[in-house]
Length: 198
Image (cartoon, rainbow, N blue to C red; front, side, top):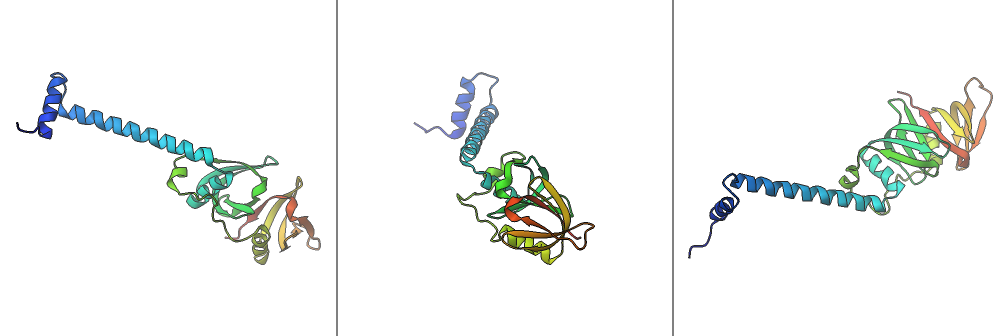
């Protein structure tokens, strides 16, 4: 007895399925089932990733893609922009070409991202590798460039040129007060907007 070839099997199946059914229909049906199974698996993997995510990992995923985010802080401040960097103590969100906001991670209550596939596109370690710089060091860098800042701390806003930053205090010369320095406790800062010089 001659073993059936793939062609003969397909022809026999097509004949058994009725005159209108062809090999092409069988192949198309198989492709549809395979695609549906792949979508189901992708949804399942995405749900598994979501079930174990931390806010830190969501932020890291956005930072790795320089992706668009919307952040909300404990004091109901909202920022929309692109996640530029993530450190142990803070994150940086770009607000257009000439503004960046530095937000202590403990102040962030929610992060909105677009879609969910990016959570599968990057391999997120259990403990993300973060920028090796603390909040005070980041502000010291801004001080070295004499950047103009808007600082919100304890519900108050101060705008001016940063003069100094140390592990506990930020010194700011307010706009229109050349002889005055406002000292702000770092732990009280809700966020800092830097007006970056082009």
